[in-house]
Image (cartoon, helix red, strand yellow):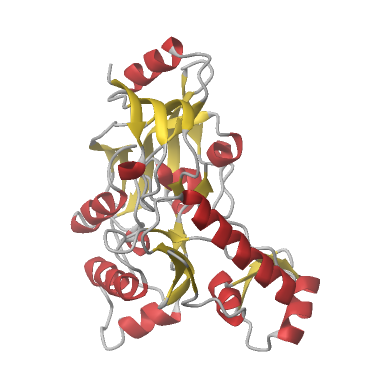
Length: 332
């Protein structure tokens, strides 16, 4: 069993902040994970995937578990669909690329999202009108307290916007995820910028949609190896009908998306930009000049500086528009 002591976590988070973990384990199988949990029943624990949605502000006095289960396997197949399982440690975009090359539709809109397969249900990752929950049918996970492996159906995962039972309880470690994908594909217009990117392409193929999304995201998003970041830092706010109407009085060009039940989603990036924070910098931390939703690290290894800048943005947006932005990134 691979257990390391006093490990520097800077290489394990995309913001590249420094912190030391007293213990770090990388189980290769579900059985090894269960054994690790039984050997360290009283240690404080934290689950770490690829580190693209987390950063550290202090040392971690406990056991960090970094699942290392790999493998992509087709479990069943018909003329119309395929059920496919991927290990938690598989790179998400590599997995999406695999499905597209195989002609399996359903995940192409989630191309170039950084992270691991195991993180996809935790955050219920989403982009361009698609969420992971739309294609996940089961999740295999270990109970942190007992080490017992359980199978969660889609309904049992409790999916919501950028949320799930795994995120809410922090009780389970995902070992693999099972998806149901389609063998047929018909492009449907959902997002204006994607349709513009595909303008002049009649009946786009799976590969053409994936390539278009990669081009869009590459233009909008900084390379984390050059400017360390965690992608979208804040969730897009959900508004009641009353909150929406009040905000429209201040911002007549407010982007809105009706999500049903008299709830409306608006753009966190839009609010941050209107608050004057697009491209703003405080010392070694700032918002990306091309996308205000992304906080970037210009050279600090102190996570507290990033957290302080986050709070400054939250306070300013709340003061100006009455909306408290909620971070999508986990902060420890």
